Amino acid sequence: MWGAGLRASQNIALVAKSMAAQNARVEVTLADIRRVIVPVMRHRISLSFRADIDKLTVEELVRRLAEAVPEPR
Image (cartoon, rainbow, N blue to C red; front, top):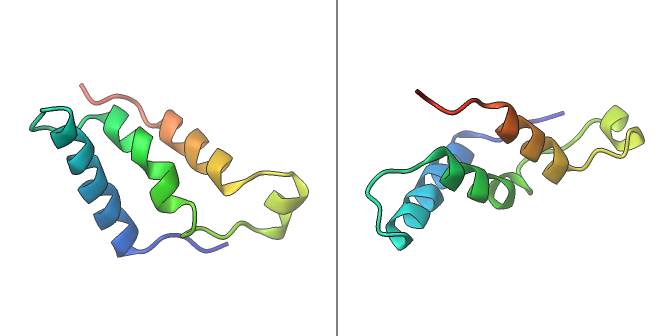
């Protein structure tokens, strides 16, 4: 119904950078982003009535979208 704004993408980047640093890496991986995207996006997305009827949760939607993104080459 409505999506996340600019602050959501900024927070995903910051938290993913933090995850990489905690693992002694200087680069962010797609795995870092997939690990942090649900907690960041959980409260920033509102589902439609249809999604509610289909018993789709925000967490499941974000997980599906994150898994659909291919690994960069």
